[in-house]
Amino acid sequence: MKKEVYIAHTNDIPIEESPFDYSERSYEPISNLVQEVFKSLNLDYMIDRKTVLLKPNFVRINPKKPITVTDPRLVKAVALCCLRAGAKEVQVSDNPGFGLSAEKDVFANKIVQAIRYYQDKEVKDIVFTPWDIEDFKIIEVDGEVLNTLMVPNNFLEADIVINMPKMKTHIQAGVSLGLKNLQGVSYHPERYNFHRTELTYRVIDILSVRQPDITIVDGILPMEGQAPFFGKAISGFNTLVAGQDVVAVDSVAAKVMGYRPEEVPMIMLAAAKGYGERDLDEIEIKGQSLDETLSNYGRPQTYFERAIMSSIGVIPNIKSVEGGTCTGCMSALRHSIDRLVEEKTELDSPFTVYSGVPMPENVSMRNIDGHLIAFGNCAASIEWDHSTRNSRGIFLPGCPPNIFKLYDHLKNAKQEDIDEDSIWEEYAESYNIVVPHSNVYNELMSKVATHVEGNNVLDVACGVGYLLKLLEKEERHLFGFDSSEEMIKHAEDKDIKNCQLRVLSVEGMGPVPEYANLDTITCINAIYHWAEPISALENMFRALREGGKLVLSSIKPDFNLAALAEATKTDLLAQPNSDKLLVHYERMININAKIAANGVINLYHDNEILELLTKVGFHNVIYHDNDSYLRNNFLVVVEK
Image: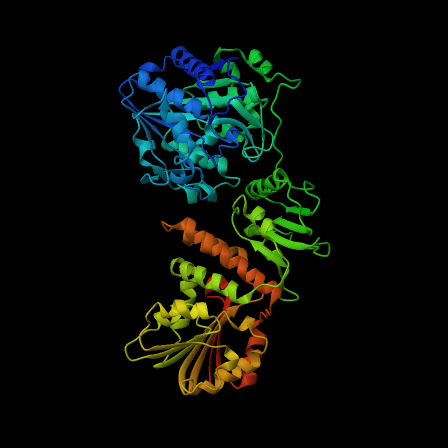
């Protein structure tokens, strides 16, 4: 038996009315289309006395640009049609993603008014449940790319799920229709982490948990070109594509847009896994025929203008080097580029944006135009010049980075010297928030702590005091100093027992009376900032008692920044407040890059650090190379 897909079209919707500011003149024809779909597909019987969940596309909703989201008039019409069919309750849920709040940025604005109020009366049986406050359930799946999924409870519990995607092209997926719309079901931090090449497989994993019962594609005011955000509207299209088989609906809708189903990976994989029919010969199209629908455009070409993913050559002052870049970073990069174009942003100076993994041999960095930006974790190694041990530019981490990360950086780019006081204030705040949740950082501190002996211990460049808190004992006297006043303030907030803290640089530690006859001095990730490392090490040598230890750890020249960033991000994603933590971690990464570009950075090979220590007078050197901090740090224990 063939799958049924219904195409409904009208010429009666006035184009001058906005989806967010409309009258009965435009609402009534849309309502009539919905009633036509329900009657033709006999949907009323499915809905009677059932709890119905509507899943529209409300990604980055903007009343000034309504074409990016499912038309509120359509959502209202479907909700009311369900109530008239006897639905017990109708819920509307979505999550806009990208760190935006559905509760504040979506359901708190015009969308609620546009849907809930009908003929000046509130329809109380329409319940709005933002997915950033709805409880999620962890589901074990035998997935293509996932073992577990976090899914909203109401998505699992609703009797009927009506999938309501916006018809639009998509930079990464080709088209954004019913299958792609299911990505919005995902818990936000997981959702963005899989906007890479495996995006298609993730959607199939969601289908394995639950398939939508009905899909209604919103082609009233579809979007073509650089969608999902920066495309153009096709006015007067006024078409719905609907059915119970999401794969069949997407196949027909894709054909309406000028795509063969074979060109859309999501359709191909979903069909191959048995979730629906993609063969147009095996689909019965009711209502308006495909040929009639293709004439709806009202212009010479009968297809949607396709989105372009590459960013090469789009903006004259941005040289985009795509080094085998995956679709995740290419898509994220192009979103930022398109936003700059839409806002007609003029850049004062040139930039070279490198994405992807640099080839292992013959990578030329001689022709960098202006300032270098390493975009995404794979490009991290290109940002650091190992020959000069200096930063070449800025690293924007992520796999992929947020779609507007490059946009934000370029809009705020300033070439003047950094204000070190203010930048360390920002760093201290973020470091204090991130470190407790990072296994990577805590592993290093724990390893350093295992080498600490005695009851008089000093932590040089103590930062916000986490290592000192770890070393806390009743009988132990602790000392800590840092050149940043903000770091010391955070350390003081931890109420560390028997601990004296002060704002001080390593160069000024010599005259401090308490810093004498110390049993152990610790120092983590500070030596690379010191312009005069010998002088600093001599001060520490003098402060130790005979036989006292220095436990020193710092980043090695061949450190793997991408691996460190990815491991830390994985730790942070496991936390309930992961959105906030990731923002602070990216701030830490970028501040480090600014400091590297403007200050002293000296990374030492093992023979060089050992030479410095023995020159000062330390002996009994124990060098730990490969067992901490993802092999990015050395750890040296020496005696006086």
